[in-house]
Image (cartoon, rainbow, N blue to C red; front, top):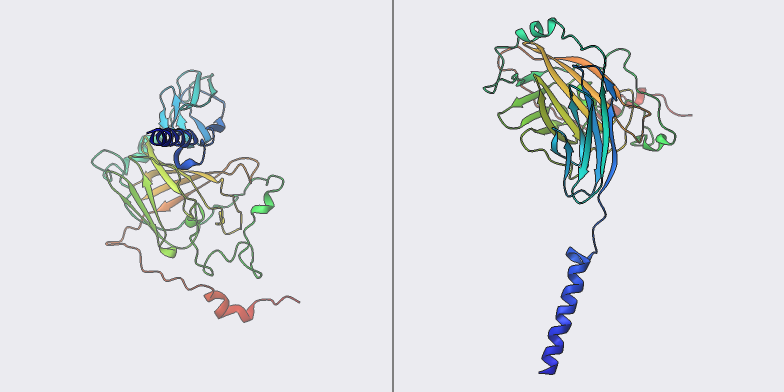
Length: 332
């Protein structure tokens, strides 16, 4: 009887110790923490908007008050407070942090052309009243004058080199057949297609048959680092806003060879300006690489021909080198 009782006490002790170690016996998980929480800009006029940007680690839940509510661990949210407002980022069972948007000055008048710009798209709306973006669009090309800000000290370690004969700004496209990432996929001569549903949105690209699912109804945190990132979308009026995180840091941002780390955060804005034109805007923020966020903007044009669709594209790696390699300058 004593031996049985001793065995039961030993098992209870082991079970208690195991439970105290946490699931899997690996000890308590890391403490939740707020990496950053900021507002851009900190001061606005009535009618203007500011962008809340945050990054957290190991949270069981994240929320922003007032008005915003539950959010993903890392992202951004545009706010338009009517008066000076202090926003609080709170981690469940963890710390909190506040930022303040100061609202002062004369109200911003809405441009009279705004309604006229949307007038042409009134017949292209979904049953919920949102603009219907479904269609095949052409590439735009990088607008003149678009230039990345200065690199942070030490950011050269993120330079992407794919081989001994790599030429910056050349080998991403048409040679190694890797997905182009965001926003470079819109700066290349291949079309893409948007498929809009009452739920989520699908974007598919001719080059490399890359795809993106934009989660509209249920946002999710990036579980893996990928070429095209994790995409969470929402509507701000008639503008589709896509918040993209979870990049793998292996894609260039453009044909000039501007690069980014896996901390890249891109906020895209798609606004219909007429029945077949989208104004595309991307705010690029990589705190590990660039000294400040930067922005590019250009139009995307919907194909109007009947039954427009993406054609099959087969990428053959290093075909350019195979066909024209003898014409390249050889190192001495």
